[in-house]
Every structure is written in structure tokens, then in C-alpha cells.
Picture 1 (cartoon, rainbow, N blue to C red):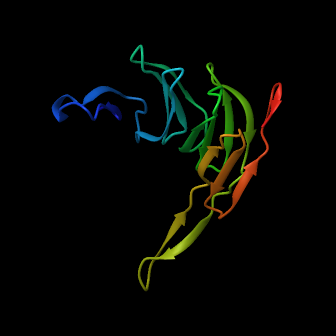
Picture 2 (spheres, rainbow, N blue to C red):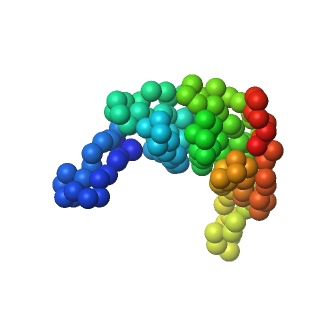
Length: 164
């Protein structure tokens, strides 16, 4: 069971899956980011794992757990030197490439919330919202996030030698 597949939409459907791999054992990939100049595809999974797939060599380079909960969103910096991950645990983390070393971590930037939703007249079920819903780098390098707490934030990111 492969959970990430690459498709060539210009060839016949029976040959269209040109590459596939297992990046996350449980739950598959929740988020993807592509780095064209590096030929890397990065995926985030249900258990907080981050996988890096080299498209030229057709193999997984790095697979490691980086969040406590699922990675809901990924974004590549325009320079392709940084990756940002957003998790349902409410944290945002900034990684440098190519080794994926942690540059900065913003814990509980978008808190998770739990509330009770009535399912019928006599029963109710707890519902937990996801922390970080999306993170994106602007072309200027500014980093933005939005979460299930209803907030949209610009995150001040400082990296060695520069400020975004």
C-alpha cells in the first residue's frame, strides 16, 4: 500500500502513476511541499512525522518524527532554504534544508479547542478542533498562519544572518 503517488497526466491512465512510495505507515500523508530546484518532495503525516523524498533518486532520504500530533500543513520558503510545518498540536516549526535542522519553534501559537457537540437530544460527543490549519510563506519571505482558534497571524521569523 503506497500512500504517496506521482502522476503524469499527459500519458495514458494505465501508465500515469510514474512513482509511488510509503512515506507514513499510519494514516498516509496529510500535507505536501515541493522544492523544484532540489527535486525534493516533503510530506507530513498523521503521527507528526516528516518524510523527504528525492525525486531524482526515487527514494526516501529522511523520515523523522518532528511534532507530537499530525502535521496539517507545510510550506516552502521562496528561497527553498527553509520549510515550515504546522501541526494539529498548535505548534509551528521552521526547518533549514537540506538537513532539516530545527531553526525555530513556536509552541501553542494556535491552541486546540475541545467542545461538546450534541449528536441527538440525549447524547453529546466531544469534538476537538485542530490547532494550525495552514501556514504560508509570502513571496517577500513573511510567514503567515491561521488556526482553528479563528486567528490569522504574521509570524516574525528570525534565522541566522537574516530576518524575514
